[in-house]
Image 1 (cartoon, rainbow, N blue to C red):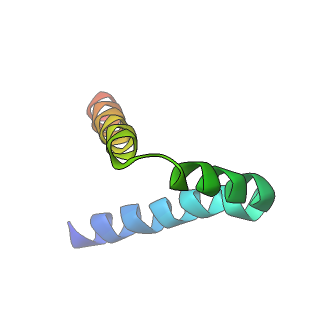
Image 2 (tube, helix red, strand yellow):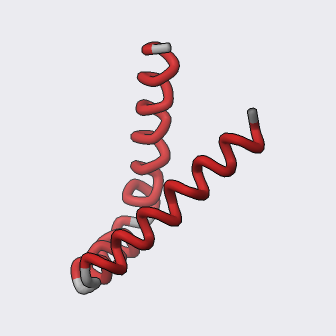
Length: 61
């Protein structure tokens, strides 16, 4: 189980690094927009992202 968890974490790092690598200017602008959002909006985005991830995992498995 730990190997799968570590592999998943490594894949997250790869996916998270694609946008800053390919489009650094767009990524910088996105981070600036996120800095201007309030905590509630960011939490809602995070919740939606987690729920979507769980739903996709359930469909795949």
